[in-house]
Image 1 (cartoon, helix red, strand yellow):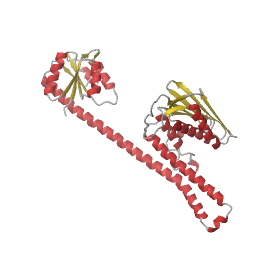
Image 2 (tube, one colour):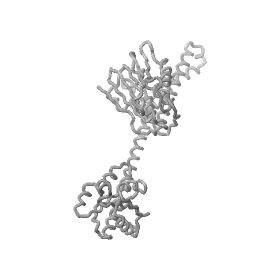
Image 3 (cartoon, one colour):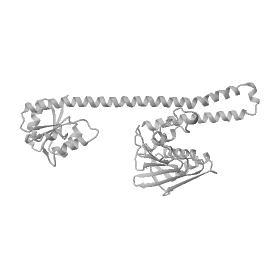
Image 4 (tube, one colour):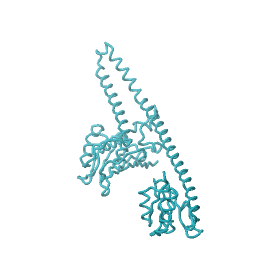
Length: 390
């Protein structure tokens, strides 16, 4: 396959002579007469080598090379500047261009430089591919390790209640058990444990789905006052309202934006439920407001226990806080709620900010894009900013 070369020169005759020479040598050549045309040709033709005259209006070849090298996530382009004197090659050493060649050099010298450039391009491509494969391999190893840790903790979380359920069921299967007054109590206990385990497994599956980038979203117009009210209706029966005050405020009352109503409702439920768990008494408040034409802010604040700096970096990672710990080292919660919220926020083009101080309560701020026509892809990058003070 021929190597693609882009020649940038506002001297049409010189550019055509160089093009003829390169075509005879087996290269695939395209032309540009200005810096702007060169940048467009790079996007269109994806050349491997660029040969530019020292001045390509309205910019210099030096500026053009800087523009090219500043572009991220582009294939490597070997840049050569044609100069009028022999002092310009200093720029190549400065990293502006990969090589500089006098314009009056012979065709044989030019072709020799191009062959050397092709060897460097192959080496660069090989190194880039090796780096990519190594990065993917490391990510795969990290994913496998994380999966093994999660599976180990899930097994621990399920094993204890399953052992209890087995003991209760074996007892209830005994003929004399039906005559005991505790029969209904045992059945209620079994139902409670089964429900808890089912909720944990469902949350684990949902967290994996949301943060994998393959979730299905139901995008449309969202009335934030309505979904906030619905979320509060779900959470109120779960908290002790004699000890905890729950308030909700949406400004303006007709606040609307684009998104998945059910997902945002789930996000609010998870955050308020988390706040209630760690606030034995006091208050939990939910506010919703527009930040600007493109974004909406959800804020859930509590007056509870706060978050210790020692666990801040692991917030939002499923089971990371427990890791199978028992006894005094056991930390309540699986971390699945925040993991789910992180995926929902990412799909809405936003992020979460967690601000907390031990003993002074916690505030979770979720900023969502309200102008998106479709959900954004979610991935493995962290979408949580943690501001935890001692």
